[in-house]
Length: 314
Image 1 (cartoon, helix red, strand yellow):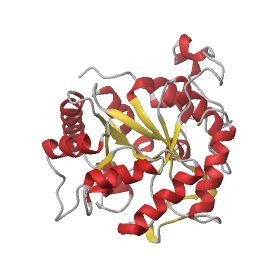
Image 2: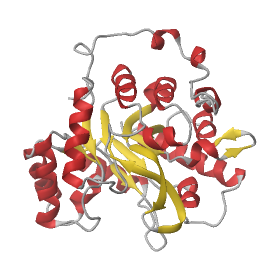
Image 3: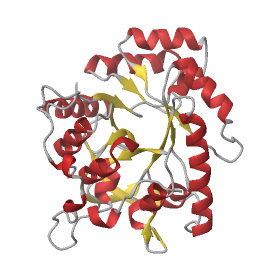
C-alpha cells in the first residue's frame, strides 16, 4: 500500500536535551503561521469517560446534561444511545442539551465479537456520526496485559490490512475509521520501524484519533505528529500527565504515568490545539484515565477552561 510517509524517529524528543529533531522534514506551508486565532476554525471540546461504565438511564443523561453545561459539545461512544429506549428519542434528548455523539467505538472481547460493518454503518447513520474508532488492538492488548507477549510482525501486518479494509468500506459511506494510539506504538518497533509509522505507511484510508498525551509520554512530539499526519487525523485525544509512574487502574504489572487535569502537566496543550486548529481538526476530546487530585466535574471544568484559554477551542 502507499500510505503517508511518517517518520516517528524524526519527530521524537532528543534523549539529551528535549529539543525536537527533524523539524526540517515538515512541509513549508505548515511551518508558516497561516491564520490568526480569531480567523481560524476552532476545535470543539469533547470528552470520553468521566462517568461509570455502567451508567445508564437517568444517571447517564444527568452526566451529559451536566458536562454540556460546562461547555462540552460532544461525547465519545455514541453506542450508549442504543442501550435502552428509542434511539431517536435518546439522540433528540442529548442534542437538546447542546451535546452530540462524536463516534461509535469498535471493541471486541472474548464472548462479545465486534459487529459487522453493515451493522456499524447502520448505527452510525442512525445517530448521525461520521467516525468509528478502534479502541482495542494488538498493541493495546499487550500494553495493558491482555496478551503475554507482543504481536509478531506478521500478526501486526494482518491487523493493519484488516483495519485498512474496514476503513475503505466506511470511507465509501462517508465515515472515518480511526486508530487510537497509546504509548506502545511509538516504543515498539517491527524490523526497526515504530508501530505507528508502520500503520501510517501501509494504509491510505485509515485515519487516526491521535492521543497526544500517550504520544508525548512515549517521547514523541505530538505537535509535529499532528502536522505530519495532517488530514489523516480525524480527532485529537487531549490527555495530560506528570513525572510520576503509577499502577494503571490498580493492575499490578501495568505501569503508566500519573495522569492529571489537562493544562496542569507536561503536555504542550497550546501547541497541540494550535496545530489541530490549523489542520482543521474538528474535535479536541478530553480524557483522563484516572484522577490525580480533582474529581470528574472539577477535572472537566478545569480542562475545558484551560483549553478555551488558549484561544483554539470554542
